[in-house]
Image 1 (cartoon, rainbow, N blue to C red):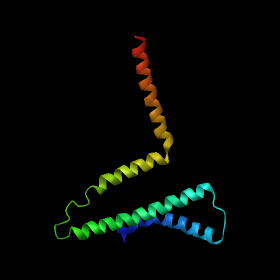
Image 2: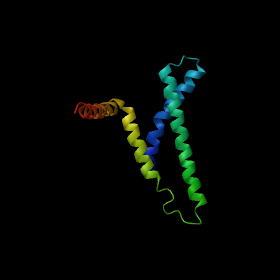
Image 3: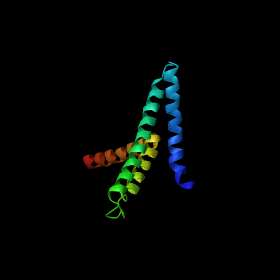
Length: 116
């Protein structure tokens, strides 16, 4: 049971969003701009989840005769990068503050060199 916990939790919320979109479409309710964006995001995440599962299954099936050791090794670092980007893009303020601070530091050091 524990192996499917993460994908199930990941997909469940997006399935609810897509289901709400289908209900709104069937009842001809208006879709707000943010709801449209949320629905597109949920559809893309669900499609990506299925595509990733199919890719993994395809790699394992095609490489079964040759051995699958390390076939999916790049997935871990890629997931780490995606999770990191998601965290920082979900809260862009902290990332923007860091970039502004870095820009001020760079501009300040450039001004110090120009005045010397």
